[in-house]
Picture 1 (tube, one colour):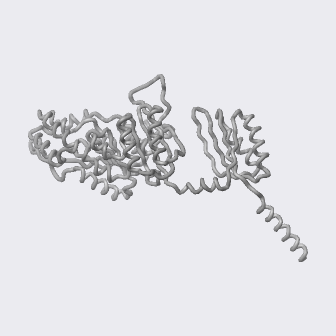
Picture 2 (picture 1 turned 90 degrees about the horizontal axis):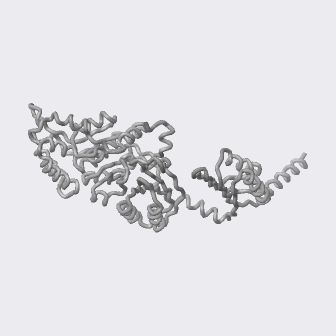
Picture 3 (picture 1 turned 90 degrees about the vertical axis):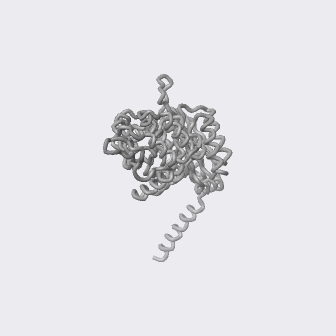
Length: 431
């Protein structure tokens, strides 16, 4: 009895020692060629026969051309046979295959990099050229970052049927910590102006993936006009008001002062003209698509405007916007504008306060908020939001913003949020 137990114990020890002494190695497998259904399954089938451990795997497919990388760990006695079998299988599948040994030290170095920061660099243009991408990737290189992956967010562009609404967008996943993030941001924004291209650099964390509240300026952002200018034209004081508006948006005069001056010039105007103006508001390119997607995906949407409540509420009804905060014009008993306003002016400081207030009400972390605007009075909320985007903005705003959109419509915001055209289409989100 004791002899049998002793013999069994020895056998178990022998098996354990054999497993412990078994030497294993890492092999990086690279496969390229024409993609086809079942190719990855066929490769995995070969590896499965040798009880292979998969340490890493990545695949890209560009115009049906496959690039597949697999890092395996396997005992040395099976490494030769598995490579031989894979060579035969590659020949059958009509693809190229290569092998490279990876030392334990090299692999552990890769593992150690997992703790490094990750950033997402989004590049948008009507079209994208090698020159533009080279300039962006040069900045990435100078900042000591490595590009882990590149993916296209927009659909493929037709070379026969072109339109003014064509756009191209790619997203670069970067690993590492910039040598000087502030300088990197400045370099990208400078190139945006010089090369007719748009950039967004964001830290790739859970907040970027879980944006929940988006706040828009209205005039010259959601609509391609300033409502006070439209009212001024009707009142016969268009040039005077437009001059004050432009000076205010450039930050040359205080917004409250300029607002008071402009409203005073509207005294005596029939309030009925607001309905006519609202019904012919020039909607900014991409607004319909942007609003439809945001509502479909559960975002809370707010208009925080230095314009007027009447027009904000018109857009609210049209797009199902959740919050509207703007300025209220005073109207007398004869239905005429008095040249005064009611309540507190919604200026830049108030916009930032409202963004924080709505986030608190909706139980949304500020890092999950987005703000989009074009004027100097939008800068406080752009700075406060987790993602502040200057849209077709004035020079002073672009100079102080961290990301901007100037080359495409306002639905370019979707790409900064990581949306992909093909995903939107597949799920029926885009009308």
